Length: 427
Image 1: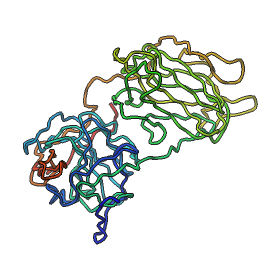
Image 2: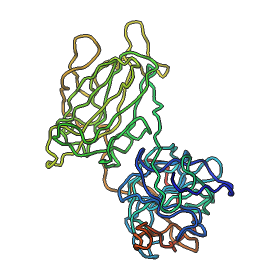
Image 3: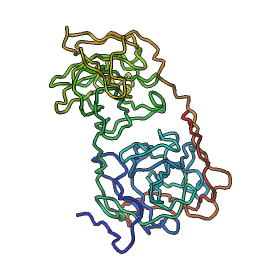
Image 4: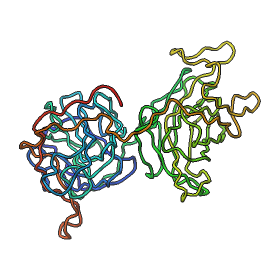
């Protein structure tokens, strides 16, 4: 049993938290409440040993109130105190949570976005006053700013982790998306609905809804990384399956999508280097049988030395009514009268399923957007940042007398003024 400190004598604030990283992964707490540098404003914060560029997942539900993603600066000195990237999510009970020391432009979120546990918050970076990569996390008051007085809080399955405790993430949301006889789009950011096996993934801020994942294509016999789009079925029937291929980071010519439907599994090839935007894989019958899904592995037959990226973005399923049937209540269920992408799947002769490989037209995919390397309009901190509140911490590997745990150095930078809210538009 982990030696976790449960603060039974303190009134806990905010919701019970989920662990803020990928399901099934274990990480140590390198500084707990009232730790080495956690006092004052940061009294009830935690630091976790999350490596640079590793994902941070939402620990609670709420609305993004402040975000900074434009900083590329950090170091082991108090002069970097105002340079941390962060995301603040407000809860509906007067508390908020802040995720700090994130990498530049690694969050797909914007101010006003709704967040649920398991969503991607961003990736850890070396921004702000840090002496080593880590995630700073705290529940806090809503004070109209982006760094407020921390409050006692705990994790649903672990209570209050202390320094040296290792906790395994049980942040494993179930997919709530169901095919209902209309049109259903599964985002690669939908918690529980797009499942990524292994951690060899990168994010980019372009594609459908301005985000996609990618990994490297390989010629291995079995996939090292697999992405799976999952869903339930309330209205069985035929559905047109389309996948979105982003303009960037999709260079593999041998992508093979597996459509698991009605007890069968079929493979459809797609050359991502020329097929962009929404691409149709075919029309398939979904019955609600167990484990119906769409899957894409990284074993495309292309040597990893080629460095070809394999893109993972949204999947769209649209009901195709048969004779005497109508679509779902959203009115989007019927046939669209043609293939808008110019991509046609080979038919098996009437079963409503595709087989063989897809013939691609090489269209430009007008739906995709490109990443120009800008900061996506996210907020920078205003002038005057740093006027007396302790904000965050710097972490470094401790000397041997500390058992190798990463401890924090007191962060002297402060948020003394309000963060500027990002505009409502998504660049």
